[in-house]
Image (cartoon, rainbow, N blue to C red; front, side):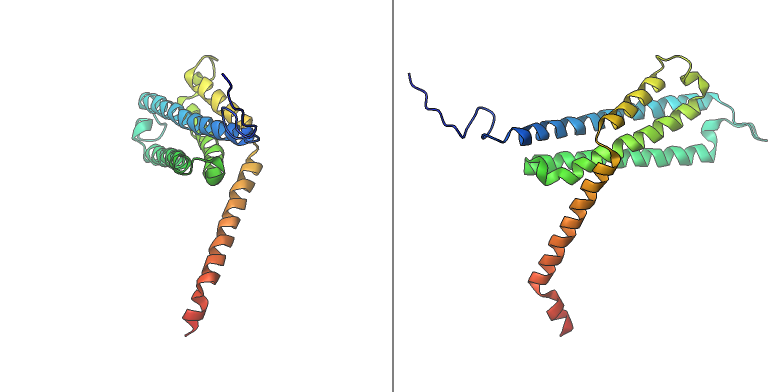
Length: 193
């Protein structure tokens, strides 16, 4: 039996398209890892809440830390930041699913890869502060391991400056496309009349 061989096609994709295929798979795994560290950060917040219910705030009222307004406000801000990161990851996944290529959702993936680890590191650091020195004493503590994992994830990614330049470049390209569209539609001529 003779099988025809087409030099331009391989089993995975067209010839010379391996780098794009690899980029797509790694971008999907980076979004998945971002969602995973968001879940890890939520666990750390839960530990901080349970720890704050045990601690007494040193004031003239001697109330529990969990009942203080500052704690509640900071907790709410961190929860909003975490939800923003989650929505950013979901948006990147939806664009990836709609377009099917990583080039069309490069900015969304870069935003996930930049913002999620930065935000999660900040929130886990706050959780460690709430939990106190007990979280750093044993190296097998969940908070210590979480901070270590998220920090390594941030270091393993491309530098923040590169990710920010990718986002900025895409914003500029989108602005240039939008200005060309406005010029093509001659909105300025119709507004003068």
